[in-house]
Image 1 (cartoon, rainbow, N blue to C red):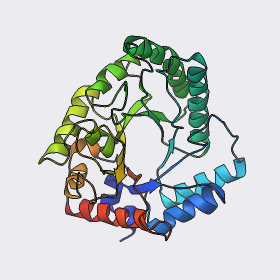
Image 2: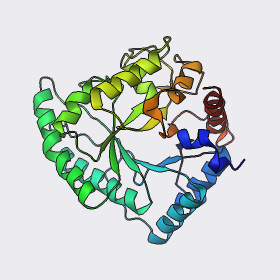
Image 3: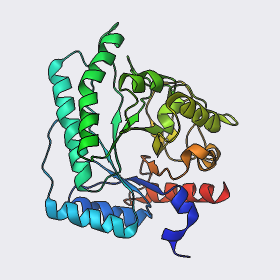
Image 4: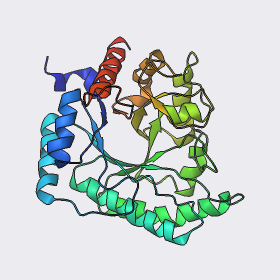
Length: 299
């Protein structure tokens, strides 16, 4: 059977965050995706730990987009980690808006379906209400621009719960989305390691299904657009963002099978951000892709 026509793949493409340094989106990124058997990809379009907003290469962008379409590879962009609209520093919020706008525009250029952004934190104690007001003022205009200019969806990724997190538990998504008027260009990227670290016990029987039920109840249907499939090195509720390979962490492999069973995940790609456990590039991701494919087949 043609793999691209496989209904299991159509239900949940499985892929990974791929590197794009050295030879770029096609030469490095797609070559890596092919090597690990990826059915979906996520990339950075800027330094994830910096504020630079580099212009893309139109010819390379076109080639990447065209080849992803030919391979039927869904594409996602991860925005830089420094973005935080809850900061108490005006310059940080201004740079956050510029950086996120850059990721959205570059995402459109490469054919991305969504741009993932961490939900941030209220820097300084007692500033949650102020931080949520800042979020509304800074992000709503970006969402309106995304709608007007047909930019990718903005996908909120709850954090593991470190510090004064604005959104870590699934219940927090309700307040966060309400601050943004449940905008139609808004979706969710659920990171299994983050959710586990924030206190949702995905390793317990039925834990994954219960978390997905809660997500739909909190945010509404059809808002889950991407899953970051990562095991956790730490126990449930540890509030530590330390990823492990599938089956090598505290969640274990079997709960990931429930990701392929819940109605909320229909058509939602899974992206691995797990460690590479081998000196051979791509070995860790390739093994994790195969593990998730076996779980998909058994679900």
